[in-house]
Image 1 (cartoon, rainbow, N blue to C red):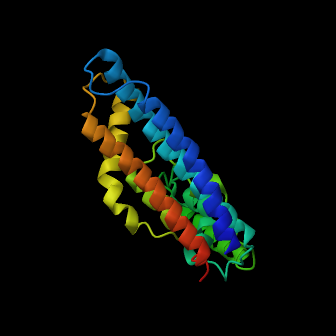
Image 2: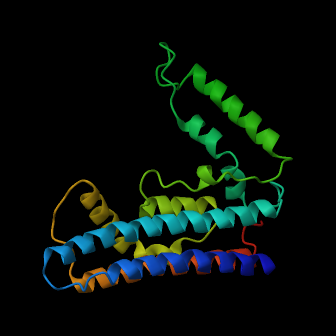
Image 3: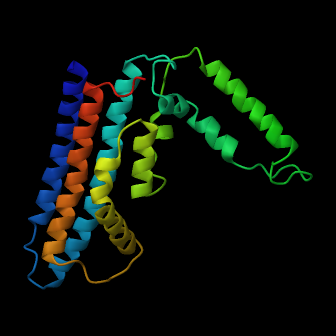
Length: 224
């Protein structure tokens, strides 16, 4: 229980300063005045909302990775997906074709046999070891934090991602708007109401993530 409380405290602190910064930007200028500065500030806020969402997700999952590593679980004690996560980099290499053999350009014949053997050897060597997760292997934004990436990251940590389905459409919309701005699009920003809804959904994701990680730590869902 102490671990869960410590995690919650750390995440509340992490989320608090992010909320404060967004509130400060929002209060720089009253939206809806119709002037250029108001529209520009909306664009700034969209970019910052995405940045804080991605930043909080990475920080929160990083804290959860620490919890799992501190438990010093054996592979036999941990959930299967966590054991697989220990092989994340090796599995990534295993799935990648190696077009270096002119007689097997897609590594689907003789080279694949070798790769299969290397994977089996790695799995056998993992059997008696402890779970040690690398943050960059299991918490990757792949350049952008999309619903697909968020669900993948949660799945790799044996965290239930169904509670986040209600936010997926809003998250996709935020990513599209943020990318458009980053690529120089001067399209009209959302209405004041749409901006308020967007901000609410972003912090809804953060609040839900904090709750789910707290409950996962409290209930030790990372154990078999």
